[in-house]
Length: 210
Image (cartoon, rainbow, N blue to C red; front, side, top):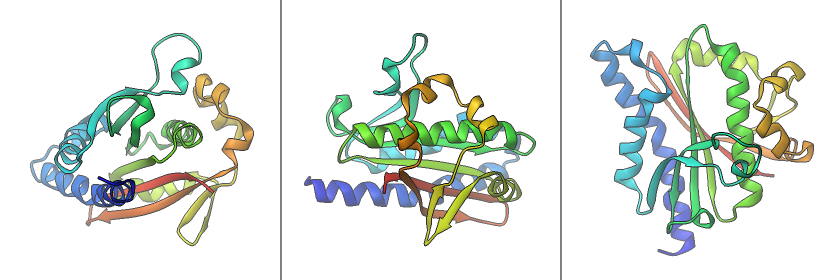
């Protein structure tokens, strides 16, 4: 498959993911399993959807190729990646996932910024790849989330205006060591697509350079 076709196929793959996840969660909700909803719980529908719809090599919990070289301890991992072959240099798709839960939004904000910045690091180090962040949650919780970000919205592009100092300190040190101030202020977060029903919402954001 040519690079152009790969590029288009991955955009389609990401665009349809919110619909797949929301539809699956709607079924699970009908089975009264709402209390189980979490990022861990989302791994099943996301993994099955990506595996069924990509011609690449799907990996989960994949070592971050940049952050793995910073500090000791357990390597930070990306939730899902798709490889064209079998090496870091062939990562063509990376996805981080967050489930938003009522009562934990303020604690989740630094983790969201951490995921976005970790993807931003990949923008700088990997060419011809796409980087996405999926957010899912109950409708009211997703609406509350929007009140906690210092983000500029222009023509479907969300630019991080700044990161509050208190929030920045709660971002893992390894990420803060790896990313420069210039990188924090030189990328865009674009909403690719979203899907919702009366109770559940999912949206996918694309992280890229300006």
